Length: 130
Image 1 (cartoon, rainbow, N blue to C red):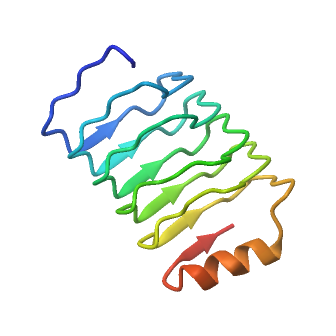
Image 2: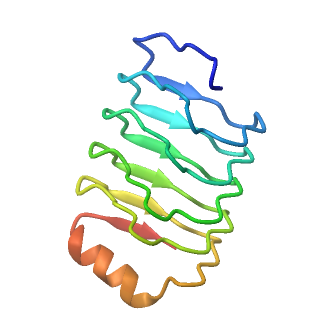
């Protein structure tokens, strides 16, 4: 995807099921509101710069094994991380506007009930599905 030039006015992008392995260096259009990357082979989100206007991000059924130091865009409302082998979630910055976080079928090695409670405390309108 590094060499793909997306239309500047693109608001929704559906790339599910394309066996995408990495996103580093991809230049997403800044007007993008919805990005569906379900059912790919993405292993990490290192150095991924998500568009500032992104509201919905779908990363279900990938190979994400850690999300350390990931910063999601501040306008993000919905984040789906279902069915990923995520091991750690260190220093992840979830936006205050986040309304829905789906983390079903994830075996966090370092995630515990207290982490989820802190997340809920810091994001009072957040619904976490796990």
